[in-house]
Length: 294
Image (cartoon, rainbow, N blue to C red; front, side, top):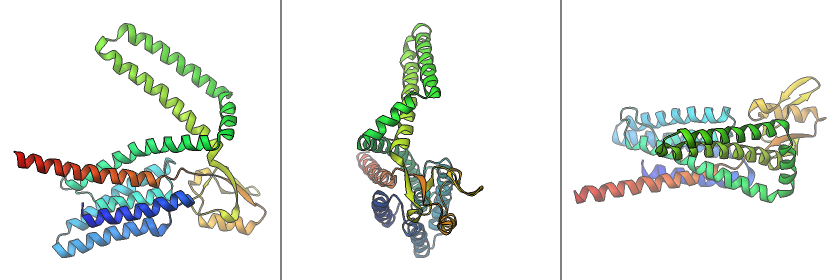
C-alpha cells in the first residue's frame, strides 16, 4: 500500500472519528472525500508509471467495499457514514484480482479482520460505559426485560440445554475433545447474555425523543411515524431521508420523533486501520530480516 494512501486514510479517519464522537454523524464530504482522493491517487500513479493496475485495484477494492457496506447497512449494523467510509478504505487499499496473495489483498483482508475484532471489543466497552453513565435507566430496563415471558423461557431453555449437553459431553465425549465441546457451550451461553445486555443498553441508553428540527439525514427512526393513516418513516427505512424530514417539517403537527442513536463506530475503524498498518509493516520488517539471515 502506498505511503501517501496510508497518510490520507489516517487523516480522513481521524476527522471522521472526531465528528462521529461529537455529533454522532460523519459528514458526506469526509466519506466522499476519501473515495475521490483514493481514485485520484490511483489515476495519478497510473499516469506516472503508465500502468492501469493502480486504477483497476482501486476499483476492485471499491467494489468489495460496496458489497461489505451494503451487507452491514441492510443488516442494521452500520449507518450510512460507516458504510461510505468502508467503500473509501476499499478504494484506498485496493484489491488485485490477478494475484490473490498480493500485498493489497493481504492489507484489505487484515483490515476487515481487525475491524471485526476491534469493533467487538470497542462496542462492548462503549456499551458498558453507557450502562454505567445511565445506570438508573439501565437497572429499570433490566428489571423490565428480566420479567418478559419470552426472555424467561429463553433463559430456562438455554440453561437446560447447556446442562444436558454438558452431562453428555462429560460422559460420552472422548477426553481430548471434552474441552472443545465445553468451550462451544460456554460461548453459546456468553453470546446469549451479551445479546441480552446489548438489547437492554439499546432500550435504556440509545432511544430518545428529539424535535423534528434536529433530525438529520440517516437518523434511525425507532417507531413508525404516520401523517393521518399514511406512513412517512420508520425502522424499515434504515435511516430517514432528507425528503421525509422536509415532509415532517411541513406537516408541523408532529413535533418530536423517537430515534435510536448508534454507537460512534468510526473510532473503531481508526484503531483497526492503525493496527493493520503496524502489523503490515512489522510483517515486512520481519520478512526482510529473515531474508537477510538466510
